[in-house]
Image (cartoon, rainbow, N blue to C red):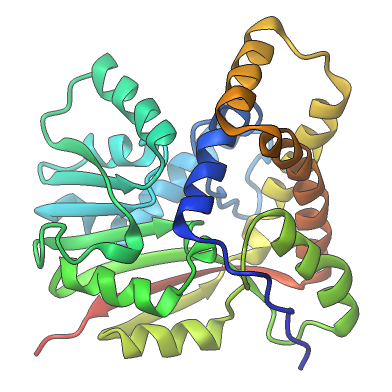
Length: 300
């Protein structure tokens, strides 16, 4: 079985700086939700808004969000999903993220429309021990765990915030357990390098990590065939970014990011184009998988 060569581990601060720098670029070319939308057979791939609505309804039902008293979103980014959940439950929704730039975007969302049951907290997923210990009865983490330096340790931290029996839905990019050497060398390794991922996990690794962290795995789903339209959308967004003249507003925003983050921002922005091309190829070849894991914190 071919394995992806592990990239140098990036610190939490490196990941935070990357998302701080590139936040506006993602919003411009991808939209408010950074995770992938699920498309069923017969769905219109151009109707992204409807796909996200169905995706969120599916995830929210999986964690029992409508009846939960406190819902935790890990790596909430700009807060769009947290706000969506807050509109659909009487319980409190808490969004946690380590990026101050992303949370600034979330703060604007709160300012535009007051939601008394929604709040955002700046916190590192790797150090959650003091975040409302044992107070949440539902949690969700989308498309973020692949960036964490130690997913097993992160799951143990998350467990400290959850009540016994609480459900956690984690959706993540994974590598195929049958990835070939060529797929690894030409697709997965450069994808990880460009996107600051130390190593892509796999389904068997997640099963082990969840059990070790005190969870019972309820359901594992490979959603890869249902998200192909997203890779196509990312591919065309990358081509559009290469072809379009940069507008004045976007240019000013990118210039500000360059001042804050230095020359690394320019290189990181260029790398995102490579990521979009590689991700599409890796997904179409079957090397890159999109997997959801639904688990409950064990009782006793």
